[in-house]
Image 1 (cartoon, one colour):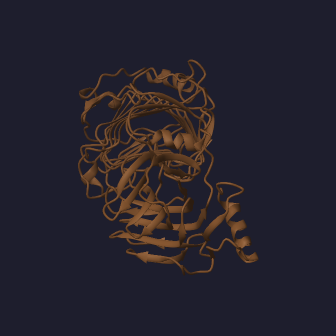
Image 2 (cartoon, one colour):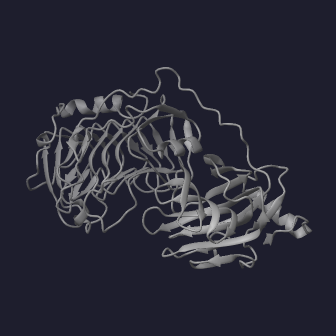
Length: 525
């Protein structure tokens, strides 16, 4: 359904009301210049250039640009001056770097316009085209998630340009290249689905958001990791997260996603429980994400630490995500993984968190990621706990990597993946408390090398095994406590010593249960 006539028919007014129910219209007094929700099943009135455009069903009828091999644009509407162009945008795929999907404003042709794009790098790009390549005017963090819907709005009023993602301003600029033009959609060597296109003549609010304050002493960033996250390797000496950068407090999803996606060192203090949009949300390098008190965390979405999966990359890329700390947060209700580390990300410290009730993994580490420490976490009320290495066929990325330390965690009635390991060596599992893990404790396969020592296993029938499923691995189990009908280790082979990489002290396994129950989880640092 579309309209570019300011004098509505009753039917068009009804359609605008339906759109208003699902989108945040910039102002109650805004005049609608154009809208199209594609409920009529066609895209009549849209002038296309490049790409492959069609109306599809994606929950409801929507307009999809499915090609990724060209610069695709579609324009509609009249030649307005001041305008706010808004659409729901679902990025699908990006063909390389520097790519984006976008809404357009003041489009004078298919090669002259302003654009607000969601990029492959997870940022918002405000730019223009003046007959040639895209010109960037401003960039900002936006928490872009392929496969998820984002509300994108580009405002052009006078010479002021403002860009909003999910109703939060993320970029702004001043430019006088174009004073009027049409609205549009674009996929710059990228595919996306677009819906609920709305053009009005009034923009959104200009008041700055309220900045939450951090209670004195409540966002503590002291401490350093033990284990692989402390090692000097791959150009990074230890894991310091946002040290040396500013500190910001967040208590809304928009603030949180903007902060974790920023470039440069930053400490993000989370106040209370924040509900995120479904899906995985990218964390940039050099971040400390720290919950304040014992009741802070996230629900509804998960954190992704790493570049997009790419099987052709078999060694650590220069832009691999690195130096990230996640501490003192509760994770609930994730629609995918709670925390995912991938694509050669390194120097990651996941410490003193409480994770439960997710969908897939609670903490998954894969695709060549290394120099990671997972410590003092409490995991419970979930089946698929922690995966290290995602597939038996991924040797090209994983062999010689996946170096991870797991210590002082409480694996509390989590049936499997405690962790399940492929290829990594050495994988150091020490001083953890295992309680009633009904499938396995540590499962070491696909030629992985697991060093399992000083742990306390209670009511765990198969505490350590290298013959769990698929190709076998190697494991050494020493100085562990097995109590209350726990089985014996099923181990063979030799494994590299963790002491070749870092210093550590193994506590008496009989002291581990009390220490971990008292110290693991949130509110303990």
